[in-house]
Length: 154
Image 1 (tube, rainbow, N blue to C red):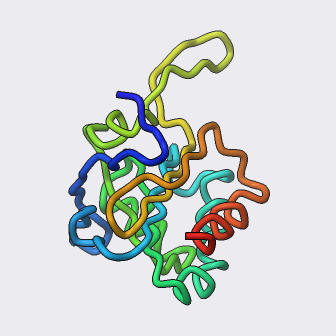
Image 2: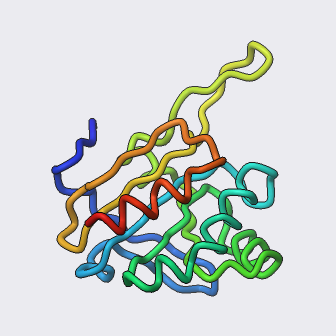
């Protein structure tokens, strides 16, 4: 499925850190930054998470929700969140259902070996559930600032 700006975002419900659940329907009415990342507590993923953490006051001023998604277990998310004091939801997509619907589950290659994994991707969804921004193959430096500007422009 090809996602496009201006089209409805795929619905989702996923388990989260702390034993909760998050769904797009429950976040209706506020902008949602849905970001997919490969693995808890790895260098790039930690830098990205800490970037969103540090910008959280700016996102909170405009009532935007941030949801980080990876295949990691809820227990792993609990440890990652506690270690870096992350003030936003981390969702577990162990079966990659949501990750696939958002097109972030892709073939990757390392040292000539091909495998499936999460491509660092971010989606900005407005309060009506419409995609307003798509970032693929995200490079961490400057990304949080770019997403924040897009949210502020809604």
